[in-house]
Image 1 (cartoon, rainbow, N blue to C red):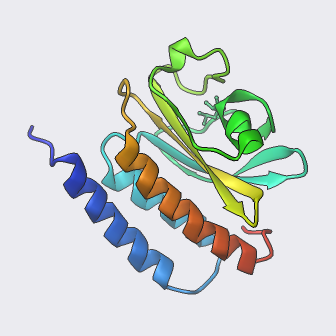
Image 2: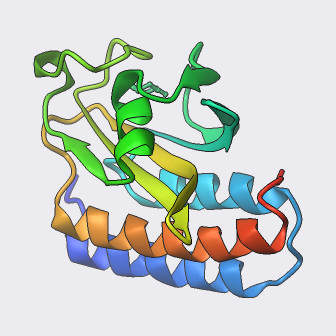
Length: 164
Ligand code: SME
C-alpha cells in the first residue's frame, strides 16, 4: 500500500494537535488525547507515552500503543528517557540495539525519540516515542514534537505541573 509522504502526515497531525490544544478545558485527558492523535496519525509512531517528573523519577502519565510498558517509573539518569530528562535535550536513537543506555520495553522497537517538556529551564516531563522502523525519526519529527512539548509546557505550568 502506498503510504502518504512524511510531510503530509506531519502537517495533518500538526493540524489535529492544534485543534486539540486550542480547546482550553485543561483537563487530564489532554495528555491521553495528544498520545492518541500522535499514535493513530503517524504510521511510524508505534508507541507514544508522556512521562511527568515527580521528584527524581519520570512517571508515566499517559500512553497509547499496542501494549503497556513495564517502565512506568524511570529514575532520572536511567535509559534514553532518563538521559533526555537529565540533559534537557531531545535524544534521537536511530538503532536502539546500538545504544547501551536503552531500556527495552518492546522486542519490536528499533528506534526511539525522547523530547523533554521544559518550562523556565526546568524539565517537567517528556514525550517518548518508539518505532518498529530503524531510523524512523528525523529533524521533521524533532521539530513537530518540540512544538508539542512547548505547548504542553505552558499547559502543565498552568495546571501547576501536577496533571493529570
Ligand atoms: N526505552 C525507554 C524506556 C521507556 S519505553 O520505551 C516505553 C528508555 O530507554 O528510556
